[in-house]
Length: 446
Image: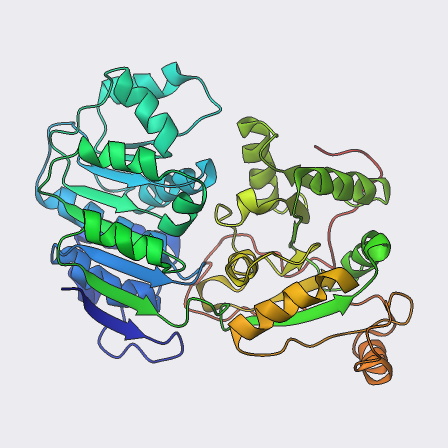
């Protein structure tokens, strides 16, 4: 039987106020302090005690709520308590290269003072580079299913000492068709192990997966999985499809657009949007499935370091971008599902901070957007600009246009990025709050 515990994001976590209360190893607590974490997020406060107790667990929470640290921290504590022999003792399966890297980056930052090693395995880079690290011995692997099987079939990995399996973003892995690979991998693992499943949504297919692979799991649910993070401010701009690029450029030129992630539906749209914006002087990068792994990593590094202010991406990046202080997410196309909308806008307002989600909607996309609103349980404000209105039945038109001009001093502004809330302290890290807008240059950027 599955036991369930739940919490709402805005509920006070009276039982766990600091990371010290978990009983984590002092070396791990030192890494937490150096990363700037001050208080556990709700998913961490609920999940970590169950994981440290050795329970199988289903963790369901919105994107950007701190799920990665919720499993990395107790795994580090467990492995430290029983020193290994340089063999693989924990395995994290993730749907994309970016997510596999995200888990490994968290592990490396949090284990600076811990004698444990790990490697991220993903496609797009030579096998031999990863194989060398496996030969040297690692305690933790974070991998995409396909690349992990490449190494398994080559005889490079022995799972005989494995203690913990994590299925990260399980709903996304099922959407991408990884179930046969996951089933094959699990068949190679020791039957006695701890299994943790984390997911942003909990469709029937995921529940079936938990019955197959987890033993008497406890279920932790944080908030409504069809709701975006509470710190997100939403707005939609009705606009003809052929004017979207013009409106996007105008919005990006507005104040407060310091770090902007623009989502497109297709790779072709991403390239077109990126090329057009570059010709208009914006400094940006484009990432999608056809760009090389090295290109994608360089683009993310430049975005994190604030060397570019705009990143244009397809949904391949929707769950793989772990960047602090993204001020705005822009949906150049309306997402096809409410889950897709939640995953996209979850890139801003991370760790209980605040941010803005802007959607550009043409007439044909309006029924799809209404379905998203019904799933979210509320209507999102329409802002109709006189220069761009597609004539959507005059809803809010005079009032909204006047309201927009009064808020931003004209037609071109976007919702301003609010102050950074939440529980994370940045310490000495560079913040982007002082920038007046996305970087502009006259030259081409990659």
